Length: 440
Image 1: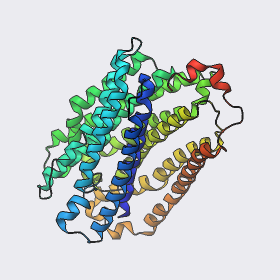
Image 2: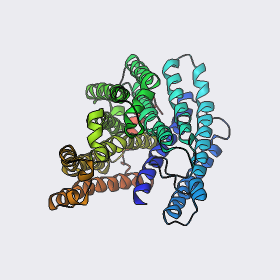
Image 3: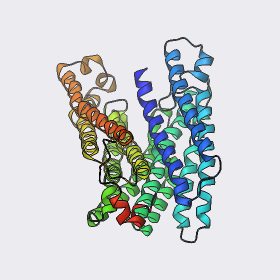
């Protein structure tokens, strides 16, 4: 149950942060807020609460065997990671995503008529928004009694093309758009990276999905092609992040850039973890021969944690801080707790992997090659004193990470209560009004 809630809440939180950012940015980009937009935002927020609480309650009832097979499928637990929630909640979420897309489109549409707008980048921005609800639909292409191989195929459409795929496109487009507006990225570079990213996913994303389908009869050559295309997915976002960091170092003297320092730092952390977590650790397990021995071992959560939180979680925090900065644009922040949170979260994530998950995964891999996967996953191997020590070492990284999360919560709460607001007032916004307000 805790494993289900662990991954499910992560997806819900990340998606909520992204959807909220879109609702914040769309009127800011166009300079126009349509009628009843506020009602729509509040309605979506209530729907999200109902879906999260309802699906989690249904999963608990299903695991406790309080629901029958049919009721469990519709309202409880489907049994597939990333689409654990019952089919009713899945449909509810899909409708909500399309409602969000409609609100985004009507808010952004006036921007296309503005002569100074980069319509190509804005169009890709809107396309990335559209991909979020559209590529969630394949998660409903199986039913309660569908053959397992077919159901797994469509489930990996959600995991790869939705979570790993168009989440990646969304991340690339959003960061490129924001960095362009901030002056940290050339428009040509942003457009090229976004087009490169979109082309990879539209032309090779489906092929990239096949590196997941090891045990559903996929031929070796298709597995190899899937691993190759999957490895290419990380390139555009990494290039954007490192160019933005280079430009950031050249423009540190500008007060308005300093004001957005920590949201930008979280965006750059996205590029770093995309290279390490999604790229290095992802390709470590993706090639067919590696996948054969590493399937189901602790090398999987190495990739999962560094890619899901390292990329999408960091992006969610960066987008949240970006929106909060827009809501407090006339105030300077006290960023001591935020700086502590940034380094603690990143250090904790790194130590969680390097001290525990990766050593355990590599030792399991060696055991899998020597004697077989059955032995690498057995109690005989996993319950040795050495493995116990390595598992307990994870508490070092987890503790540092948790303290960082608490510091982040303390900072955000302080924006409401006042202890995260510096007394200088709106000096930055007064001195550099155009630059400071460019993205707001």
